[in-house]
Length: 223
Image (cartoon, rainbow, N blue to C red; front, side, top):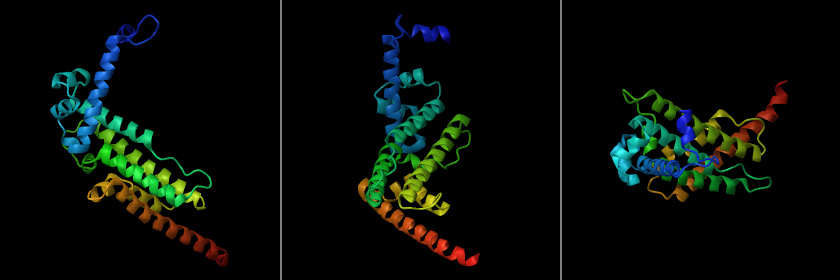
């Protein structure tokens, strides 16, 4: 392996033309896989990916030993793309409601473009699924939930909430900022879907903050 790695580099440490060509081909295949996964879900075949990437089936398997390896790499690519475009927390003094709307819109756009139909297949049990692929799906679910938790916490703290938001608030963010909501509102544009989700989440936040304030008022009377 060491000898192979060394042969892929020029004397000054740069990748050889052959290695650059292989890297471009692999990236093209992954791009095609991401596109067709969003269109067809995890029932996608190697031929579907080859057609989407405009390469031969043989080329696909030159870069990925098995169909399972291809799907694992495609899921990893989706995670990297989503992570790179994830909305950040609202800056100090920002209009939190406006930030929430734009964040929800951005996520619905991402989910429509990068996840699409594949969302419905995430929780489907398939006999004989390679362990590595099952693990990649669990990672996808965990990362989705973590993104929602981060946004819920950012909104909660920006609005003056104490400590961490209640779990039911996080659960509401998971639901409204998931592929389920995106696909359930497929008749809406991503912006319309995002605006609906943001409106629901704003009501959730207001309700939770009211509960927290009421609890703070009642607590001293109990001591």
